Amino acid sequence: MKAIVCNDFGPIKNIKYMDVENPEIDDESILISVRSVGVNFPDGLLVQGKYQLKPETPFIPGMEVSGEIIELGSKVADFKIGDRVAGLSRLSGYAEKAAVKFSSVFKIPDSMSFDDSCALLCAYGTSHYALKQRGQLKKDETLVVLGASGSTGIAAIQIGKIMGAKVIAVASNAEKQKIAKDNGADFTIGYDNLKENLKDISSGKGIDVIFDPVGGDIFDTLARTMGRKGRLLVIGFASGSIPKLAVNLALVKEFSVVGVFWGAFTRAEPDEYKKNMIELFHWYEKGLLKPLTEESHPLSDAANVLAKILARGAKGKIILKPSLFKKNPDLLNVEFAFKIFPERTTFFFSLKKLKSAS
Image (cartoon, rainbow, N blue to C red; front, side, top):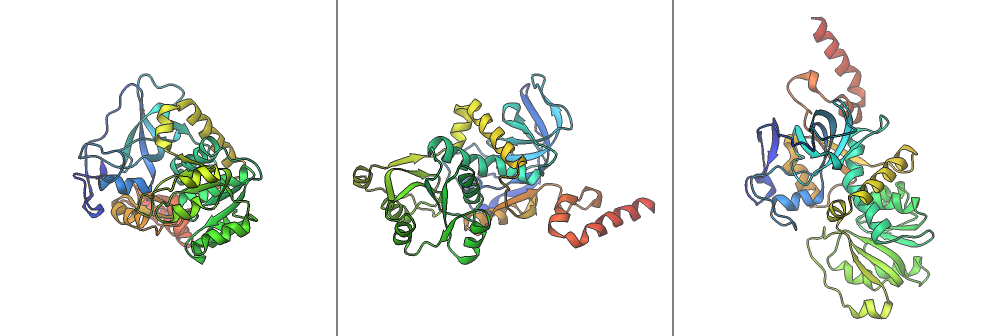
């Protein structure tokens, strides 16, 4: 099968699209024929050796996949060959096939696309856990979301609104602010004059919960906008800089700095993790949330996609498609063709029909 392989830690451009052996499954695993692969910011850090976890090389990156089951381990229950599923794995997602522990696999409803199911795993899973378990967000509280046009930011906006919060989205330009507004934010602002703007919007009371996947110098500003008993959620450091905190601010303002490590949560509290995912699927089916998929790319384009995400150029979720643009037109992903080339969907079907008739 084809896969993206990191042979050694280093620049993203060094990862390879190459042939590898098919994965083998154990008694508790499921083999998935991958239709969609979610691309996440930590994937880019991982292949450079800059993430908290450093797997042995060579390895296949990628933590979220969706597709159909093609093989089951002997101890796997409640699944069958052909089921449409989404699965979370620590590695090995950037491939045509992925072996995933059945405890981390979820059946997806017919109404849910493979792309959306990928987004619901990491992006929505992280934001949900952050706001529900770590931030304990309450109805009518004020929530500030940084990086508001990225996949986790959009998820935080939508989930914050479901939980009844007033949501202030922070994004770097008008285009990104519009995306945040379209996804439910009550207010959208930029990073300039952030302290003053947040003070005005909160009527001087300060902010209850801040969702910060950016880090860097802005963190000090955020700390100075917190309200009493507020929760400043540390999601990540997309800016590339890990901030330092003047802890006297936490003392004087009586707010908490709360770390959010969703991957650790999924392993340490698997039952709560499953409950969270069930709730997200329920909200999706009720139409309360909808992931924004910006682009789909062939799996072979993984290096370029990761570079874009690390440069904070993504708006919403970006998906890799293992079957996209293969030479055999019968393997072309029609779901993608409809999304990106709606005017050509009929052409693809007509072409295949003519070829079959000839």
